[in-house]
Amino acid sequence: MEKLILDILEESEKKFAETTAVKWLKKKEIYEIDYRGLMENVRSVRKGLSAEGFQEKHIALIGSSSVEWVESYLGIITGNTVAVPLDAMLPLGDLADLINRSDSEALFLSPKNQGLLDGILAQCPNLKRIWLLQEEITEFSDGRVTCLGKLKDGQRCGGGFREASDRRYRNDHFYLGNYRKKQGCYADTGKSGVQCAFRGF
Image (cartoon, rainbow, N blue to C red; front, top):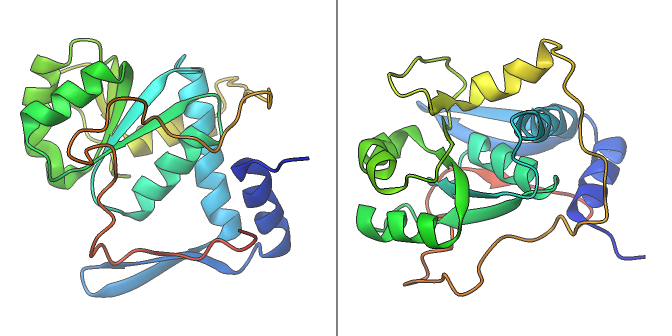
């Protein structure tokens, strides 16, 4: 039987629960998270997306690699949702075009790219939600904009959210289709300082 990414990640969590999965550099300090902690955050993202009604929807990501990007991406592709990773180096017009043409209804956006926010809101009317890739809870004037920390904390606090368990969908895909534009559907994973060591692949 073919294994999905979710199956591989869950096996890795069981075998290597306390082994470092991701390391990253922040203000000259090295941080790390083990498989158990990473998967707890991935499940939080996945449950949050399900609770907000984004099952089977396309969700875009803009930003260089970070632990928040990794958790969000894995949260998308291990649920019944489709990831649309976009190159953060593209100009606003190209990014907005890709978001619209890929039928994305939500977006994860790096705080480093927050300068794109107003333009994306104006040019992408079909976006129902934008999460900044940060844990800090921040309030925004536009009700569609919030942050990753709030998405994760919302379901952690109870709220009766249920995780989708239907595995008939292939979870190890992201959306390319005919929307590749100047390699615009590839995430910028350049000199990010993030190292992932997923065992079991």
